[in-house]
Length: 263
Image (cartoon, rainbow, N blue to C red; front, side):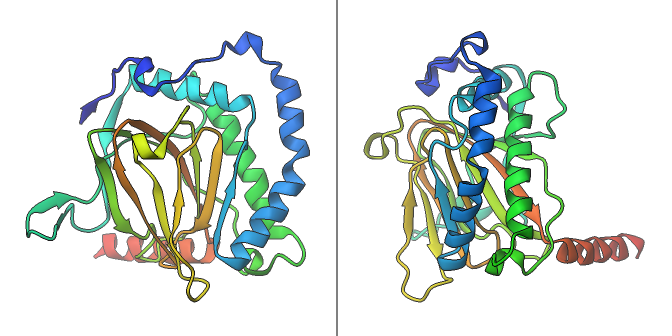
């Protein structure tokens, strides 16, 4: 376990006072962008399987950041885990960790998580709408009606990273990965920490290097179509991740788990 009581200033963030932001106007502006967001996600997921949206939450992103920093100061984050082995061997044969982040799960009902909850609800409205729209291509092949809680991940700097992997390698139902970044003044040349994705949906597609910049949303298929990694990070780095389930694959996974436990 990692004690997450840290100084907020280590993020380089300037926290906005909630009273200085017209929250209802911000919510209305965000809702007005939903159709554009859905159109972009559908187009991108059908072409390369990855979509990037900047300025996603607007000023509300400041309040999401404030809540995450509060959690980081007041709760204990746990070491991130992987499904399979915890260690890999580097080119010299030394054993090293697959992932170097610490995490905390939020379901949206916790105290002091009002705007994290609003982020989750916003993602729900967009992803579920994309799944039901006409002419949505790959976004409409499977039924999507549920998701995980939100995983808040923190990389502590010090060259922490996450080795190349796919999120869903065991058919557990995770279908779409959505990552929201809240890192102010991120400079990749100085701070590292790029998300590198290797899309395989299109032959010959080059890897994508995506900086974890403030108020940026990334969506991509959770299976082996999108191997990805977090490159070594030299500054405190936060991400909020939600996974949306393929209903049928999730149902089959739960059946397998239930049968295994019954033996």
